[in-house]
Amino acid sequence: MSMTFKDVKPSAVAIEFGKPRLKCECCKRVDRPLHIGISQAEWLKAANAVGWRHVTHEAFDFDSVCPSCVAELAADVKEAV
Image 1: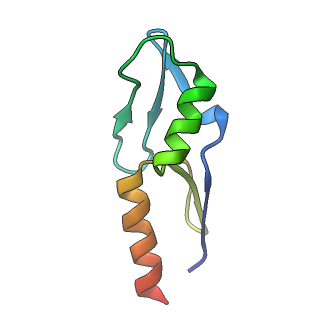
Image 2: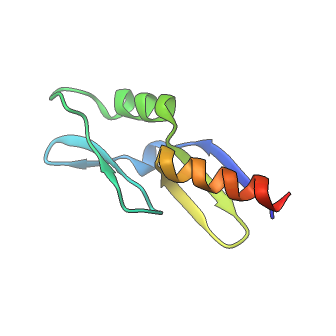
């Protein structure tokens, strides 16, 4: 089972009500900044720093996955090895 974890791409960050947001394609969690005035680029940098990832597998290709789901997916990969 081959799975890759990469930084989230800018295309995964949506603008909603004037704020950037990310939605986990695995658990559907949505994260938005608490402060107004954060740019899409700043939000993307922060999201990558806390563990949001683009996850690719033979069965799926998720553009944005939250840190909790990334940890679960990584654990599944370690179990399979």
